[in-house]
Image (cartoon, rainbow over all chains, first blue to last red; front, side, top):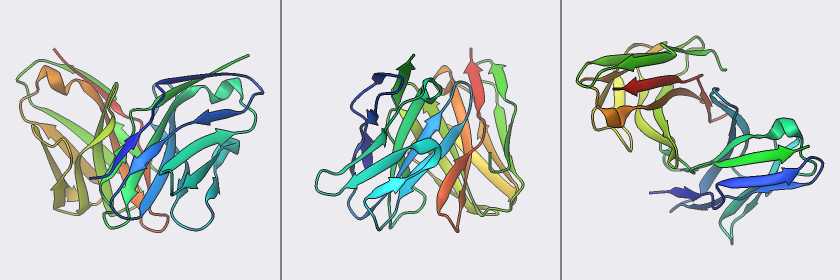
Length: 114
Length: 112
């Protein structure tokens, strides 16, 4: 079965600095990859996804992610962090051959300090 | 919020009692999912549905059952709640065109 690892429980950055939230995955076939964000006491909000095509995917709120097949990674990035980006971020993977079995990472808490 | 509501939003119950959580969607999506969220585990799939009366088990289905008698409603039942089922439960739909899951606001369940 597919799996996702988010190696950092917590990421701290200063406002205005670039941010990276790391994600690596394991899947037997070709992956569909997703990033979601969760604000306190809210559900998960979809940020972006990779299905096929360009390795650099752009999503909501200025976030982007780069698919790297050789490193099996899908890191989330933003050039200039905002305090309002502080939240819990989840990476998720699905095998293209199984539309219903999506696996999530444990989550990374991003804190952006003024 | 993709037209998804969950009820109740908060519930406290006692060990051994039955509990039913409801997920309601307004956009006629075929695919619906129930997840639980626990610290250190992210989200884990409990059950999913691919149509009325069509359901299947997910990664952590033991102790849970589901029903879908109408397209818009997907019910999750804990037949006899245990403290290990204390969690936040999320419902999701998957849009077939975008092939993306969207989540409801969640239900926080505490089993004492």
